[in-house]
Amino acid sequence: MEEKQFVGVRKDEYNIKQFVKRMFGKGIVSKVKIEYTPVGEKIIVSTHKPGFVIGKKGEKIASLTTFLKKKFKMENPHVDIEEITHPEFDAQIVADDLAVTLERFGSMKYKSASYRALSRIKQKGAQGAELRVTGKLPSDRARSWRFSFGYLKKTGDAAKAVDRAEAVAETKKGIVGIKVAILAPNVKMADQIEVNEELLEEIKKNASTVEDVEEIIKKKKVAKKTRKKTTKKVKKDKE
Image 1 (cartoon, rainbow, N blue to C red):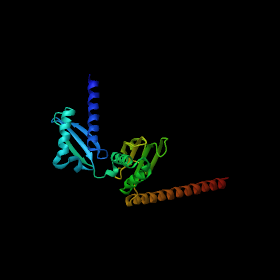
Image 2: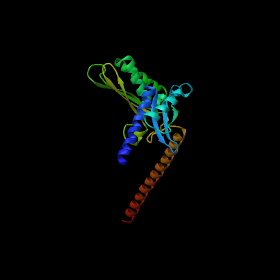
Image 3: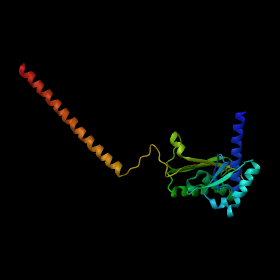
């Protein structure tokens, strides 16, 4: 019974998230989080257009609250808006925007739309990004096209820092799948080295110590050779 309840709760959460995204339209909402508090349910909507989501005098938020109460039988849902200040680094928004562009202008514009999205991400200073567009592009045979730049981790724990998202574009030729991966500029990787003045000073200090050690080793080798020569001379004199 507990397993069924757990699956049922997760299923309801998924349906709520999809309902919120469909309500505001594709490319508006990035993520929807649900938190359970003693007072009631808290729905956090991440968007780069908070004014559009809130509406005039909070009309859209009020209608969303009533829908959640009626359709999903929530007792006291409370909707919070989380503003995304840099939508270029949000993989879901980029993927949805690309899907909307392909649906509006056709699947033949996949190259120009992908390069345009990639240039926007690059201009804002992202460390790396990758866009994958899969479908009947441009022929009747399905193919996968990849557009990328910069530094992007794909395996290991460092790959968790990469923001990934997927979207679907419904075009006249058929379904087009879109995958986006973005590494934001403020993310610090474990194997990333930043060359600055402090690092250069440390390298100089280490280099000087290495030179000192090498000189000491050379002196020891010379002293060893001289000792060997003197011992050989003493042996010859005795003989």
